[in-house]
Length: 198
Image (cartoon, rainbow, N blue to C red; front, side, top):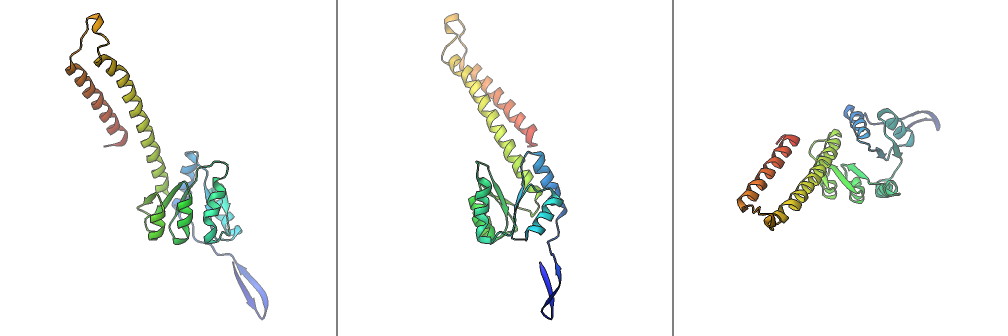
């Protein structure tokens, strides 16, 4: 807030706020579609912060937060077992980035913010946060799929290789098992390629 004073009397007040980047609203919308609540920690006044939050759809606001208190604000969001990712770019954000479960630094930010974060975004585009979350979820799904494939294969292959069918007169040569293994590996690699485009 800027106040205009003339001859000792308050004659006006101006609320000043940063211009909202158009891609910010899109990023918040996409995060909501992923089932993620969005909060904002800012040193701005509550009136300005609430106005920004309303316009782009932010769920929770911590306003008038001093730089030294950003980490405490992250801890408040973490209460009740919530997982918190913090996105920041400045020196003042470094403690909060380190406190969050996942710290995400904007690549154009300060060195200390980048050092404090677990993820560094190359561009200063908030939509890249959405891309990072989608990539991490896809990677996790692929890890689970690979674990299931490997477990299922080994549950069958190890007993067969140990001679499970020998008592019934079926003795598979090692080359059959190796070729079957290669065919499963090929299928898994092809599946991974189609899912992620290479």
